[in-house]
Amino acid sequence: MKFLFSVLAIFCFFSSDCATLKIACRSKGMELEMLRNAIDVWIEKTGHQHKVEIIILPHSSNECFALYKQWLSAESFDVDILLMDVAWISIFIRYLADLGEYYKLGEIGVGDYFDAIRQNIYSGEKMVALPLFADCGIIYYRADLLKKYGKTVPSTWQGLYEIAEYIQTEERKIHERKGMFFGYVFQAKAFEMLTCNVAEVINSFGGSIVKNRVAVMDSEESLKAILFLARCLERISCRSVLNYTEEDARGMFQSGNAVFMRSWPYAWSLLNDPSTMVAGKVGVMAVPSGVSGGKSSGVLGGWSITLSKYSKHKSIAADLMKFLAGKEQQRQRSKYSYMPTFRSLYQDPYVQSNIPFSDILYHSLQNAVSRPSADFAQNYAKASAEIYNAVNSILADCAETGVQTSSIKRSLTRLNRKLNAFLKKTHGIKEPRDEDGVWLRLKKFLGLEKDETTVDEIKTTN
Image (tube, rainbow, N blue to C red):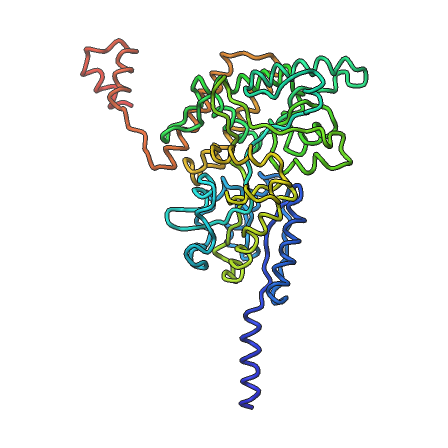
C-alpha cells in the first residue's frame, strides 16, 4: 500500500508538469503557419511533454482587440499566451503577468532590441511582453513602371504624388486599364490601420498627434498631412480605399493595378510569389518626408507575445514565449519577410538575403514614430477610434464634395478637443471651475456689469 501511494505521488508529480497551453494567433499573411512550425519544434525540443492549442483570431485587428477585452475583463483562463499589437500593451497592462519573474538577467537580450520596441515591452520596471517581430510602415512601388517612364524613386510625398499621377494617366491610355489603374493605394478604412497611416504622415510633415501630453491634431502640420491624403483620394487613389484593410490594398497592388502602396514588410514575400502579376517587379522605399530634406520614418508596428496573469501554466508558457521570441526563430521568420526585433540580426547574411531592403527597414526602425498609446494608456482604444473615424469621415466627405480646407480644419479642431478630453481623463486632470468667468459673461450678455445686487439675485434664482 505504501509502495502504491509512492507510485501515485510520482505520477501526480509528473502529471502536474504536463500542460496544454493555449495561444492566440492571427491568420494574417504567414503568421499562423510560422507559429505552428515553431511550436512543433518547441514541443519536440521539450520531449513532447506538453501540448499547445492555437486559437485563431479574427483577421481584423479591431475584432482581435474586442475579443481580448472580452476574455480578459471576464478574468478568463481560456488563453495563456496572447499575441498583441504593440499599441495594446499599455491598455491591457493590468491583465498581464510580469515576465521578469521567469527569466534571468540578460537571458532575453533586451539590450539588442530597437529603442522604440524596448520601450513598448515595459511598464515601469515590469517586463510584460516579448516582441515577436518588428513592423514599420513602408512604401512598395512598381520598379518596372518607374523605369518604363524614366522616373526615379521619390523622397517626398509631393514627388510620389506627381509620379503616381503621371504614370496613372499614361497607363490608363492602355485600353484594358482604363479607369482601373491607380497611382497610390493605402488603408483608409475606419480601423486601427488608419491611425497608423495618420501618425506617420503627420510625423513626415514635422508634426505629431500628441506633444507633451497635449493633443495637437489641429496644428498646421496635421492639416497638411490630412490635406495630402485627401488629395490622394481625389486624384490618384480609388474611393474603395475608404474600406481598405492591408489585404485589400495588397490585392489591388498585387493584381498590377497601382504604382505605389503603403503597407508592412510582411507583404514582400507574398507580392513576389511567382503566381502574382508583380513578382520581380516590386521595389521598396521608406515612407517619404512631407518636405524636401525632411525626416522620413514609418510608424512602429509589430506584434508581441504576452502572458495572461490568469494562466495556470505561467512558467511553462514563459518558456514557450522565450523560444518563440528568440533570435533563431526571428531569424527563421525573415524567410517570410517578418522583421527581427534584434538589431544584430540585420547584419545576418540569411536575413539580408531574405529581405533585400533590410537596410531601409533598419533605418526606419531606428527612427520609427510610435502611436500615442503611452499617452492615452487605458483610453488609447477610444482615442484611436476617434482618430480613425474622424479622418475616415473627412476623407469620405472630400471624395464626395471635393477638398475644402476650412471644413477639414473644423473637423480637426473637434477631434482635438475630444483627444484632449481623453488625455485629461487618463492623467487625472480636472477642468477648473471658471465660475467667475461664467458670471462675467452672463453680466455682459444681460448688460448688468455694474449691478452686483442683480447679479447676486440671478445667482440665487439659478
